[in-house]
Length: 322
Image (cartoon, rainbow, N blue to C red; front, side, top):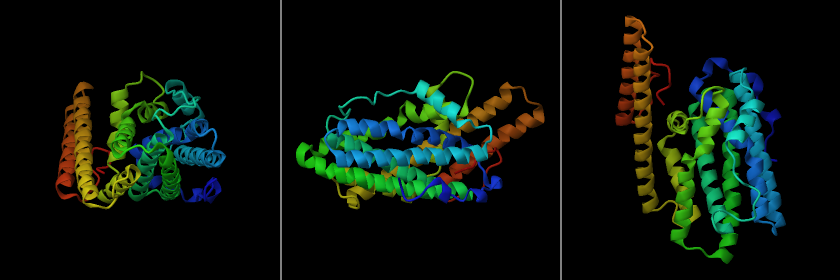
């Protein structure tokens, strides 16, 4: 297991006044994805079937991922007592399936598998760091601090294994880049979107585009420039490029601009949907005007923050500006 347990979390410091409903929803989704880590560990043990040392490390990694899921689920139940983690996880497993019972890596080699695992740890370490830095609720902040530290250790485990595997596989820079970028692109697949659906919705059909947008709109708004710089440095290191060189700095600037652009676009779509909803439900004149005005304020806050890069007050329409 890792450096902490559920008993180390100060559950008695939970502060309901600091809850953000949007954060609660994405934490519920994260609890399902993290808890599923045991299945990935089984897959890694199959791939490294003749490496008992790595198998032991992979099993420890899987146990820590499961602990992450349990911690997030327990917090989510405090935030929303109606959250049924067991039922949500059953829905997630029923709707999202990957064949882990195979000896072959989808990446073509053990080195490729380790590059892909490094990319996952890049994403999770940065995500929990961003969540830790953004939330005010003290228990969630502590959980995220612990998880982020774990994910950095996991990245180091997979990177160390990658350097060993490369002595045999000797895959080149372009192939390493292709694998890394391919795994990053898979962040848009069904796993997070379906987890968001399974954790937050018990009725209605799964709509991948809607669930992807709902999750990304809240999660991407958490990131700040330094989180993106760290992500890019870790990606560059895993593919064999200088993590703090001129190219890495340029890539970090481009990645930051792209992230801000997408965050603003998702916020704009959400505000437009809110304004449209107020019209379609036939709200009374004053309420409809209030909702549309709130949507315009939301858009204005996002635009101002995009220009200045500064944290601005929470808008009137309900969801935190960032």
